[in-house]
Image 1 (cartoon, rainbow, N blue to C red):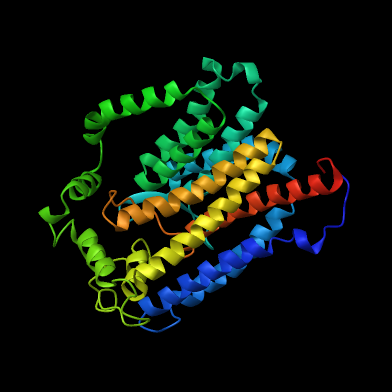
Image 2: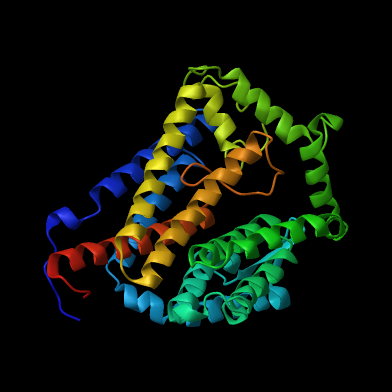
Length: 370
């Protein structure tokens, strides 16, 4: 691999500036959620963003061929970690999701979100074009997705399991599998929903029932959704003003700094703030899809599209959740919700897409892949 000096114009200034703007906005919302204090959330969120941004930049310098080569080994390593969670994982809040490493709590399921995309993309990049409409193009990918999905589902972590399945199936769709497969699978899934519902945990059943009728228990299981809608609606067009939110400051809004941080933001910044934030995420998605469309490498194309779609699922599911358009499944809003695991996952996705973008630009500069 030749070393070619990179022009300063190839540094991802625009993407980093966009992410920085979203992160600063998110930190300001967390500052307000804490009653006008940088502790305990804003300062930690800011530090994490700086550290993970450096990690993303480091990832962007890695060859795309290296990501392809280690996609399956990385998948196997995380899969082993998921099995270890079942054997020796720590239990917290009724869920068994973490491995205690002494200096930190490791949640392997978070790493599976980007790695499942890389693994399925690698599989289809190795598959001959003539095999794409045969059964051999379907069942290996379903196994790759289904095993970690099942391991995460029994932790139980429905939100992360949903993200893993969504990321892998998205790559299957982008790889060019017949549309009838997805239509048939959708109809089959709809048919087995009543059966699958009976296997859910009680709290998961309550979330689905409350989603269908949130007013049936407004002070119990439906409290989160009811207060979230009140907070969003009370913000109006321009919001109540920075540090002026009442739902979050008076503790009416549960989890106002994590899963329901969008409601905290909307109360103070209103519809205008919501549109600005969603528009910023749309620019990020547009960048990722353009990176995917510009590459001629099949693995890189599928990986870039799949990874940016993973971030899209984060945003879409969280917004639907806080607006009462989807059951509460614990999906955070990237760069806004307090927490390190989700930011780490998103920045892993961004870093790999930046690596693909860098390879695209190098290809255009030299006429071949480095």
